[in-house]
Length: 414
Ligand SMILES: Cc1cc2nc3c(=O)[nH]c(=O)nc-3n(C[C@H](O)[C@H](O)[C@H](O)COP(=O)(O)OP(=O)(O)OC[C@H]3O[C@@H](n4cnc5c(N)ncnc54)[C@H](O)[C@@H]3O)c2cc1C
Image 1 (tube, rainbow, N blue to C red):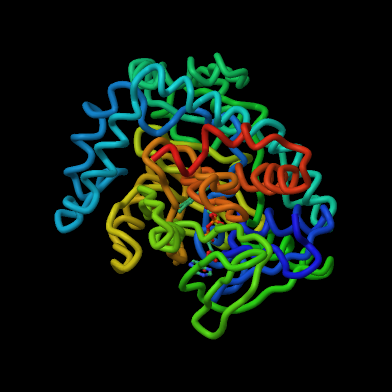
Image 2 (cartoon, rainbow, N blue to C red; image 1 turned 30 degrees about the vertical axis):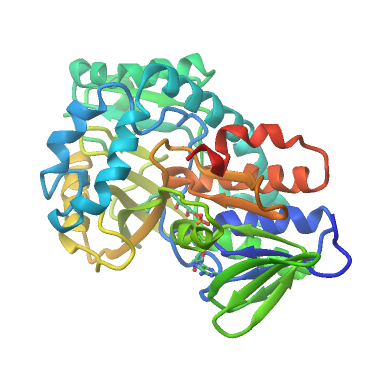
């Protein structure tokens, strides 16, 4: 690798690009990060912060067609495709359903198990190194169901988790109340994963990683990358303001990554799954850990600066304005799940989850374009997967990790 002349250039300063930048710099490489926005200010700003290393079941499980079809057509359901977007979304949805075969689901779960292995400990180590150890905690994660029949519908994904080594405990109504007294008695059964963790302030965490990277010599440039091309000894990265020379390039532009690959002959079925949050900065009740109301697919997460209710999947692309009624539906679900909750002037946010139809990110070196790396498409689990993505790319760039480990995530799989 040529590190003497030009830096490794990372496109995108979300949680993924920042972890890659930090790890590569720690390895001794010269690193520059290009992004037109503040580090961590896009999808990495408003997520639920859960470090869900046990979420190794893909979103498309066997039987997905039957379960999702009904939801897709209801405007207030947790999963929605607006009519004008059906034609755009159809090929992606087709691939999504096609990935739900039992064999493919096992392969995906194995790949995610590998990517998430040790991620909570690695986030903790990172938080310690950058001076905010309090920001990564192990609280466990609680998934609530109304009754045993509802839990049974998800049994396949719980068994898959257990087969892949995730510790899961079934709780009855009394145990739920002991753990989370604020939860409605409508929820009578739950699955608790004690080994899961959380980031208590996702934006502050991302900014702390950026600041630590900057202090260690990573250069941050504000520009929007418009094109990539090979040139002697490396890559030329064309920004809106000027061109940059790079020894290597890591594409970590989240939901915006795919168009930058198209001129290189690489087509990636990346879609934004638009998610929302309502954030209460002074909530009138507290919970001890991220909890999931499984019937509404809504997350409630305690944060150091309040309580965050998040979730929903809305297709519609990168340009459509936010749909306030989807955020409002989160509030309704939260009040049903936490009956004492007062929704006092919450702030609303929408973010673009970068999603591939097989629930796997695109990671690793691009075989046909030496010196180009991918690190995007972490979907619903970008906080969780960011730290190991950074470590893997730094290990591979330093020659310590064989590139075969990236095989399940390779861009060539499409
Ligand atoms: C409601 C919600 C809840 C979530 N909860 C969780 C959770 O609990 N746990 C979890 O693990 N994950 C969660 N996620 C997912 C997680 O937030 C994302 O997977 C993660 O933030 C993606 O990080 P990223 O760095 O890939 O993308 P981003 O944070 O979006 O960063 C991409 C960066 O690329 C930049 N960029 C774009 N185009 C260009 C360009 N042309 N040139 C230069 N830069 C460019 C953007 O400005 C941006 O800064 C949640 C997501 C949502 C929406």
